[in-house]
Length: 176
Image (cartoon, rainbow, N blue to C red; front, side, top):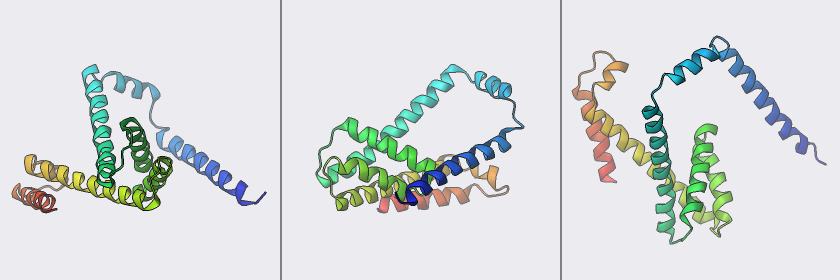
C-alpha cells in the first residue's frame, strides 16, 4: 500500500480533532442549560416558519439544477435532482469553495445519470450564475424595501444611498 492511503485519513482525523477542540474552547463559557432554555423560549410557530423557509429555500435551489438540466435538454427525475441539489448546496456551503466542492458532488451525482463532464461543467456554471443572480436580486430588494437596515451597520448613512445601490443592483439583474 502507498503511504498516501494512510496520510489523508490521518489528516482528516486531525482536522476533526482540531475542530472539536476549537469548538470546546469557544463554547466552554456557554451553559448547556442556557442554550436549552433559549431554544425552548422560541414559540412553535417560529420553529415551523423556520423549517418551512428552509424547505422553500432548498426547493428554489433545486430549481437551479432543474433549469440547467432543461437548458441541456436532459430529463432526470425530480427526486434525484432534489437530492443531488440538496446534498450539493448543503456540503458546499458548509465546506466552502462552493464552486469546487459543489462541482465534485454534482459530477459524482450527474455522471451516474449519463451527463458528460462538459455538460456537468455547464450545469455548475449555470447553477453558480443563477445563485449569484438570486443573491444580487435579494440584496437589491432588501436595500430598496428596507434601506434603514444599512443604518444599523453604518450610522449616519442617508437612506437614499442604499436605495440607489439597490436600484443599481436591480438594474444589473434586469439587464442580464
